[in-house]
Image 1: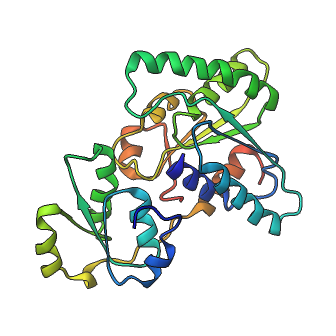
Image 2: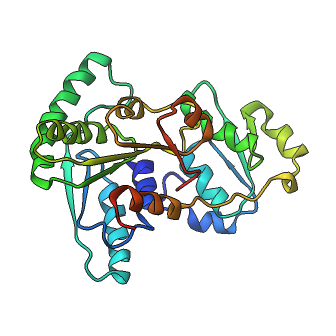
Length: 169
Length: 104
């Protein structure tokens, strides 16, 4: 969604062409991200000839301030929905930055790794908005990601397993 | 106006921006090099939205007030005391990721 999409496209801006094909996954309720992604990829295609990407929509796992119990149900549903998608794409690397949408995708990749079907490197970058506290997605994925990147030093102190590279968006 | 696709044009021609604490608004304004006053409404806002505004203020990039102190702030502000906002460095992320996946 919105700010998350803008941030993640900035993260992608300096990546080499080796990071291909790119599979974008976003919430079905998200109206604006598709346009931003297409615009980004179009610009990228001007420099790199072999640009491949796909777009997939999944049900949104949680609305803002949704109750705890119903969030568990909707997130479980999203995980079930994400499993065939993650299985189909079998990504080598998952890069995400915090919208609720990323949790089911990462959990499904984590499960496929446990089942020895596909080992995916999960890289989580917490939003620049998070200076002192982690988002809910961050709190969950701190334990499931291979690399957890924060953009402010306070968070590095609180979450010692995280990586601090400074401001990267 | 209500909602625009992009505020880039307005930002370009502005001398001073007064904004709420939304991250997108703050960062977009700072990246364009415009002086920014962030107005906080603690009653309406999510705690976490304040984090970024407070940090940007602590680092000297923005001025900071609430609705009732806005007029005072405008009258007494010293915009030259604001520091220029250095851009983020996605290249550092790319270098890091290349090492992680083994592209060196």
